[in-house]
Amino acid sequence: MTQDFSLTQEDLMAKYLFIESRDPYDSADSPNLLELVKGVRERNQDVMLFLIQNGVLATRDGARHSERYRDLARAGVSVLADSFSLRERAIDRVVDGVKPAEIERLVGLLLEPGTKAIWH
Image (cartoon, rainbow, N blue to C red):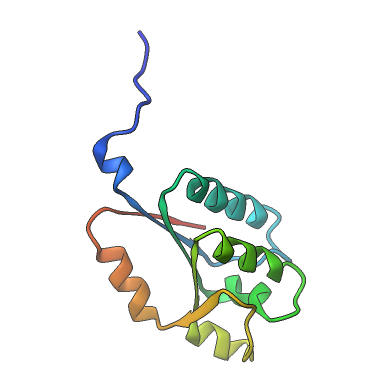
């Protein structure tokens, strides 16, 4: 028996919301998530990356790995960083392409119809 792996209309209209709570300094698989985000965006999907908790650490302007977030934003991924997480970690300047956002924004995004959320 063969399986049908074709995309449905719902898949084609989905919004993908990736939530990253880990930092690339401590979590070896964090870069893999960013590659997945990039790959989904390259398939012309609507993709958003919301960084929360330690996931915001590499967004500091000039930090190692910060260019990954800038590159994702340039590729059309909406990259948001939780404002509270930024304040708690004393990050006041983020790399170009990353926009601070309140946690309420994340809740709203999760409740939007057609959103497929992936939390790491």
